[in-house]
Amino acid sequence: MESRHPGAGTLTPCDPRRYWDSVDLPAFGSQGRIYRAKHRRARRREKVAFVLTGGGALGAVQVGMLRALVEFGIEADIVLGSSVGALNAAGYAENPTHEGVDIVERAWLDAKGSDLFNYGRLWSLKQFTTKRAAVYEENRLATLIDQVVVHDRIEDFALPFGVIATSLSGDPERCFWSGPARDLLLASSALPGVFPSVLIGNQRFIDGGVVNNMPVVQAVDAGATKIYVLQCGPKMSETETFGPRPIDHVIGAVTLARKARAWHDLDSLSADVEVMVIPGPSAAKLYFVDLSHTAELIARGREVAHAFLKATEENVRAEILELAH
Figure 1: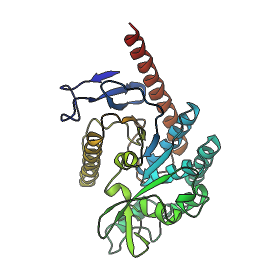
Figure 2: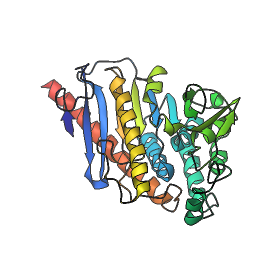
Figure 3: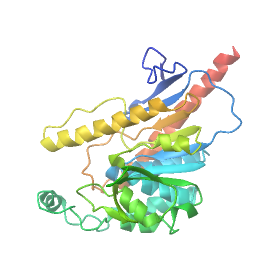
């Protein structure tokens, strides 16, 4: 584990009490991060939040990560999600147990063989050039949502649950802690140009990842003192080289904007808030609706989360021994 101290990778130069560690996981082509205060302070009890980011079909890795967290005995007090991460977060918030993770996993595996995106890739690409608001007339992720969500309203979930959606009018960034579960999850996953916007009340909403793919600030506002971020991608420290096609540059620019927002928000947190960024495994670039690798992604997500959590445990033990001497 490589330590980044103030003056060598500090993300909050205005607050020298805070720094981050990188957690390198070469077996998975991944790198996680831990943001924390330079000097640990005793706390009566942490208030733990799970924050799940968006990532399209790569969202399957979060199912494995949730299972690893449950297996390590790590429990959340609050849960937040954006885009496809909101779907996984909702499943956990509904039932934060092994059985709850089983339900989310079954929904993903069933979707692999369903007709969620049965028109094919060429058909989808063609629709992007036609005059229409979205490739699909309805958000087909509703099938997944209906398998995972039991309660009609998110305030009735077992755990407090926040979902990010982007409003097309007024303040674009919204975090909902109450409201209609199905509509809010459809809105948070309404990828522009792919799925239609969703009307909630008198306003229309689209994918939460457009404005905030990693709602750590909202987690702290809800009282979280320790945050586990379940990230779909393998790294947040580097910008991947853009591919050879114009669309690769468009997607790369969006990814870069998301990373910049995430860095900014992590910088802004109080020094005594600890953030554990669990990375996803390195994966071949998948088409955003490619569900053919779901089982593998779930398994790899569990493996990389286990490796990350084990590495952080070993680091804490080493620090305790160092302090004892």
